[in-house]
Image 1 (cartoon, helix red, strand yellow):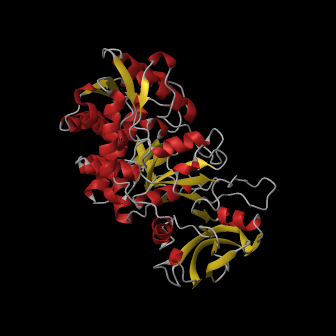
Image 2: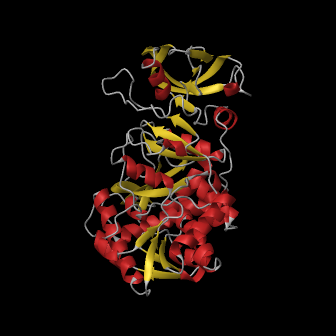
Length: 510
């Protein structure tokens, strides 16, 4: 079945992925492409959205998209930078704003138009720009204003082209989803039929056609992505899927045995391999985060390759790669968005493995992966698990890795995570964990002075990991958790709580 598709041209905004996710929430399939590397055939797309950007259209280095195949031919929505681009290069004027227009604002004027159907004066929107549109482009018609921004929204008469200076994709724009639905469904006539059930059915059929009777090997991590990928493949090819769960010695406390037990009830063909010593040897003496990542990646490939060779005639390697991994890895090769760190599960396979790659989830965001898992009847505890980094506790131990440091952090992490569950807070947090800091601090226990480790606790709320806010956990909970860690985990005498948001900080410390 062919689905209507929406093309999002990325100009480097930190919110571009949010646009795609909001569109997907409307059950509409969307794809992100760098503005300077659009798809060859834009006729495949029913509508186009231009993202925001950290750039100024007035700069000599301003991004100049070629819109000749889009503008006037496809319904187009220009957001922030896109709106200013349309104004600046089409007969309007963009100038530096007297004040940086950032944060919440409210619509003070709304023109009657299908674009603003169901959205009234007073609706809260989110601004994020230092330039502003002083005059509209040729044939521009004003559709909305805020108290500080006169030209907050406009359309180009004679075209199906709309533009807004605010961001409908962020939660702070209260009617943002309605606005996107008005544009995509009511104006552009995009069919909202991209659903989890449709995805499962079509993906299973595609996998059966692609894989036939071939054998597939999959490295399970215990996380949501690899587990959902495994279930999709299991539905498609059954016993021809061989799952390998490698214990790298950097998992959470008891996770290797707990996860293997959980997989037993799913009907999957899973083999557990304990390679803890191999990984610790590979990490010996390494402190640099990227070197640690690479050492773990290489060690995993060695172990996995050895196990894969024990399966006769295996032809495919399945991976739980999801869409944000794909976007960030593509961006590094010429798109405007910067890659912040290397991804653990995109690329990096040695040539000698000679396996073809199959990635059933590469079109999905994390929340969509969970919805697909739910539609297949998977366990809600497994689907509700917090994201956990591929390199595991190695990037939560700052500095070099030793067996003793891993033991300490596993114990601390267990106290924290189990405490969140016991307090009914686990599902209110998107991701949580503990970080072992490379410092010792002076303490007093009884009559003795101690000189022991300091740990930082981290809990964030997010929808996709692209942006995240620290969670305001109750003081009583933090007090109890701190006491439990210091009393129960030998080697720790100080606990701190990380109250940094992303940006500017990242979720992980390394």
